[in-house]
Image 1 (cartoon, rainbow, N blue to C red):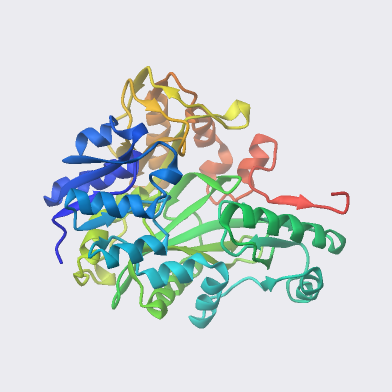
Image 2: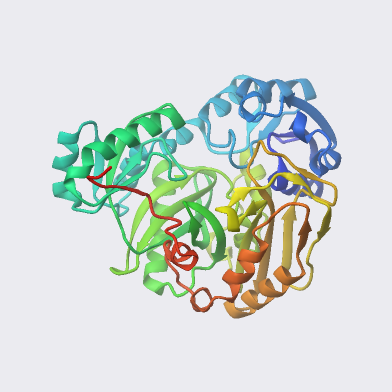
Length: 458
């Protein structure tokens, strides 16, 4: 079935990104917008706008019923969920199928399996991928027995979690019962699922992910991205390819990701995430994100591919026309997430009206945004204002272009992370490449990425 009218069930820059590709492909668009976004630039760009519900996400962007109703009443025959919100929710994929709508994303069965960290680990094991020692535990007794396999330190992680919620670092056995209690309570409150598991903790790791594109038969990788510049598990800077990775390690991660995709019979875009142990020069499977990623532009910049268009084609049931040898990666690309946050106030969100805006331009520069002068950054959603992407023939050229673009990037009226990014791009360690996930915390003088540690003193 061809997509003739697409409901974009998201907001902000990803909504604008999807609309842009649909315009190029001649696909009519409907934006499903909450009350806070009915007058947004994305709403003005779409062919039609349909009200999704009140501003709060629970009654708009997180409502399966509201999204399906918006698609049906607007005459759309497909739904693109973007990222975040309902993008990984199998209930939306199921509801679309029942309503005769194409869901632009993986099959519901894959969303279910990959949304459960333990099922994802089992799939990785079955596909022959390396994993960190660990497994599910339901009591302190089971957890202490698991330590024989994991050793210390160890992470307590939520089975259905993400973003560091429900995660605790344990460095001594006596602290384990309290860590389990805290993690189970937090996971239950955040995800409605209190199950947890243990996993060996890697002190110096790099977060490297491989982009997959698959049609259910053929699985391709489109290189890797390094997303190690993080604060409390939230990515700030991403780049492709990963700087300084040994060629054999890089190839092994590509092969492992493709192998997992084939094992699953995967369809659509997906990202297989790995943790590279810097000290051991090994990698381990972390999880799969079965959707388009925020950082997808760096892969587009180095591959020349339109990943949103690829998503739409696969959703229509078209087989991939590309083969692995057709995927040619050139140059280097780096992305900075520009958030309406104040780094000097512990990254406190800064909603408000943008009174002045000047976007950088130039060779190799791309800005993905959905704001303009006079736009309001609402308090209800993620604080992402824009993504600044710089491509160059090599990494240093990309960094130089990125630094220049940051100097020309002006946002007034709300605090942003632009000054922090200027500092990061000028830092010698980042310039050298290969920083680990704890680097930003060390730079800022606080551990911005490590889990909360539970000790015997509580």
